[in-house]
Length: 164
Image (cartoon, rainbow, N blue to C red; front, side, top):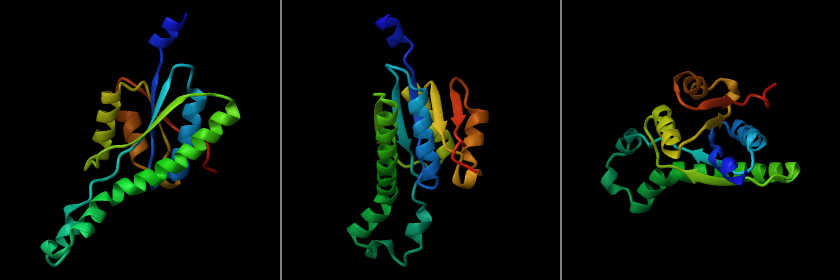
């Protein structure tokens, strides 16, 4: 019985967004409710790549200190880590409320210039069975409908429970 459960264990990816933190938290709650024993959840934040225009807007990027350049390039990752912390707090509270223990990993991926295809690739690399994400800022994001209509081979769940 344990072997059968291990073979059908699902890999659930929860999309975490800095713009839609409430949607990310709702998605994490829903993923925990969906999860069965043996399932694994990966909370994934994929920051946008810092545009080269930010660096080219400086009069001379060579004059910028290494600390300034490092701050510009690390800014998306830091924001993602702070967002992950908020999602982690909600996940722990939800598991305690449901008396459920689900393995949850938190990851901030490398910045991507194309988030849509980057997220699809991440789902494939991780072998995800289910992608759970919020609807975007104010319920009007472009990424969730794109994912729902273009991703094949896994289920996409857009959580809108928190919207009124």
